[in-house]
Image (cartoon, rainbow, N blue to C red; front, side, top):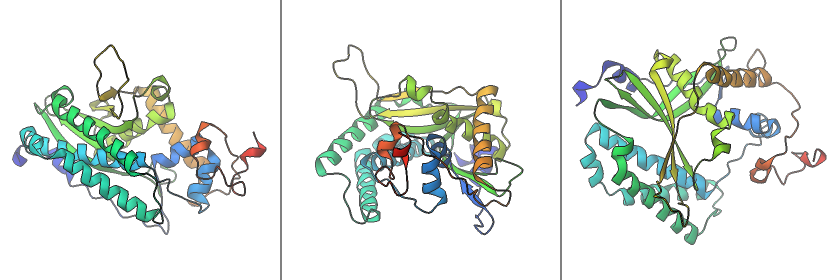
Length: 315
């Protein structure tokens, strides 16, 4: 199989992420950008001012374990066979990743629990239901006919703003497939959701910019024309609607708009973020950002820290 892999895919697989020289370079991520547009004050506290925290949660632990299990299953399927992938004990693999992830997060969280056995058990059963659904219905979503696995966690390392080349966007693409017949790539971002994405999520231009940026930067980094790249959110659902009259799927596919205007919008988001937050010498601007109270406040690590966030003065 390896000898049949197209040369371009081999080149992408061999890509090595350059080391960051923090003496004069800074890295940014989509999480930073999204945080900035949700609340500039939170971004400043989290990333600029040294008050960064990690919000440990069962949702984050579950999401990581599901990502790793799906990626492992698809890697076996494409690099060997889906018959072999189906023979793997996917439930045990997921259970191991879920357990390992929780133990690590528990340790990193000062050995403080953020879930309980009953909740862990419920999330585990949800994960098993998702994975079994994927195994039974994989042909609806993935084909090996003319398709190759480019990779999972494909790294991006690129300067979005030529004027400030030492501000580096760094990220990892969940899954990329290549169709030899059409000479096109498909970039997938795997998301976990309690039920599904509704109009609010689908119309969120900031949220959906993640895949547009992946498309733009993958194109630039690997010299692939943008019109040869498709993008898709691959959303796995923990719960199904009760008493539904219709057959339900554990998987939701959503392809955000990615024409010229949408791509330009997302690129300008990043450029504005960099211009707003960094000086010409790559240092952070000492801007006093005001809180932007919203529904996100209830999940914010600084919500109950009035000495750091004075949002109550604005409300």
